[in-house]
Image (cartoon, rainbow, N blue to C red; front, top):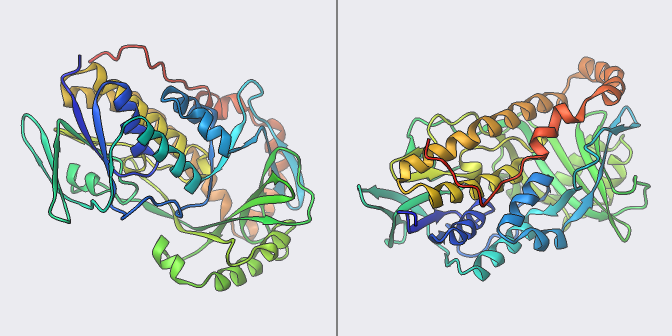
Length: 396
């Protein structure tokens, strides 16, 4: 049996509940501590789960519950200059699953509770004390909690990351703000296809949900950084004016923006990417999910990688009794993979905010790229990745 018996998981978003559930499966008592006063079921917009991410959820028994709330999308297309171009995909892989982030959060939270994971809210971490035998978390309300290890699943603005390494880099702004909505709009969309559209002024994407409903998301170029709170302080009516002006000349971007009501608009604020984090752990503290690797939304892998890392960390803590040795094995198994995905996404980001000249060049070369791209080379290793829960993790 592992020498690690208990764990504190800081953060109750996506990686946190998955890590705690996987730790429970590994025989390690895990508790989740969330800074919000209650479940944050209203934060976020739509996101994609790649086949590898859904497979990792299957390891903890949550895959089917997530499939039940998701829209399977087996095909992808590019829209450039108004022309629809089929994008190559991996025909032998399950479809991408599109899901509302708030719904995903709810399902993972409920699955963790059903697995016996205690969750405490209103627990904002302020400090951590470490000894040779354990770790104690100190919260803003004056309470404390102790365990063998502490896992920072507290997102892109991670407090645990600063405690692991005060010199660690923070998230970088991609120069885009995120928006999304589900609307009823009388336009034709390709069946079971997500379309990545390069509009006249900005990038957007859309996909059919069924019953006449269409999901769409906008990556709005912005020189000004706006956090989630700052972006939501601006009335939705004003954002819709900007979105309709930006996408008004596009089809179907214009109709989608005009069909969106203030009540339907989901505002997510600045889109980020995490640069490589030098230190993933220190003594009995370790990072997981967006706290340590957050490729931009261009990757289509952000949530999937967070889920994978949470499960892999549980395997390492199950099989290696010394925390730092377990954390080192976890980092070895994950760093090159997550940083490779982040590098690919960073290249895509540049194509989302082209200038006038670059936009015209894209219209010429994108049709060629769509025909010649090798999906196996581009995303094969990403999407085929599977975690073997029963395989033992070597210490070295």
